[in-house]
Length: 162
Image (tube, rainbow, N blue to C red):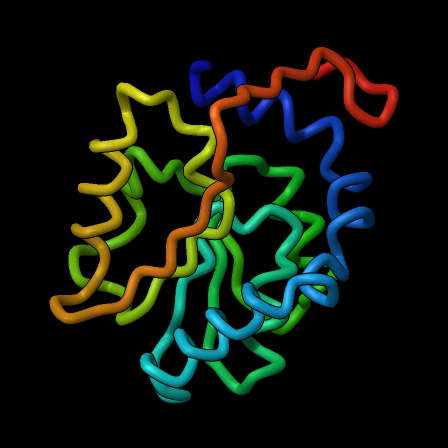
């Protein structure tokens, strides 16, 4: 899938997505534990990037734990939802394959929660290299993905074409 296609798929469902997943971490104690670990390792004075932030639920959780945080997502509409739900967190549009607005060694921590699953397999290495570029030496990367062999493709999501 081209990254522009991914943006086009998430823009129409951004409001539904943000509503559906706003409290998803309430049901994920392991994810919360790992985010707490990341916040502890990075420290309260350093900024963690929620890369592929979607509706901002991970950034919001990290902020609730006392972390400085920002968010980056490919979808402009997701950024709008994340900003609406978390007005005190800076969010910006960006492509994890080319984070052109982010300098080298910018972040001491990155949380990329279930976002790399959208990267075509052939481009995963490029995405990881870009994460390494913007991660400070010795920084912490918390990367999550789904396990299994099944690939899910949707043509419609919340009664909208994607």
